[in-house]
Image 1: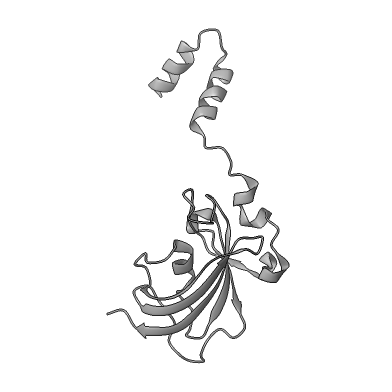
Image 2 (image 1 turned 45 degrees about the horizontal axis):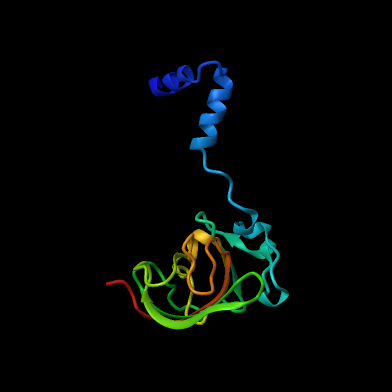
Length: 166
């Protein structure tokens, strides 16, 4: 508080209100650009993204189960499980920028955070459509053909749970 009073006093002829406004402008983070907010984008029709049908996790991941949610009464993936996944990643324009099939331990950080966040609760054979805000994808750094702060769309399939947490 004393620092704030000192800054206001140091502003000389400025009013306290204008000094606080300038200080706020320096300290506050500006709002993100609209092209980094998934809900403000248009998506290529071929991606099949319908935001109205998607659920949103607290960290900002939007997802929708596609088709059958997986094999009947089989186990569901949980943090710590080793799983095999298949994924395809796209920019909102429909340009494919990522794909692969990997075995990972859920929560170990082997794939981008958005993919890992979507796996818990899936059953083998289950598929999900994901929309990832930049912080759950490649963030401010980007990678290869993925520009910094890109929103990404992923098709994710949980092929199998290799073994449970142990």
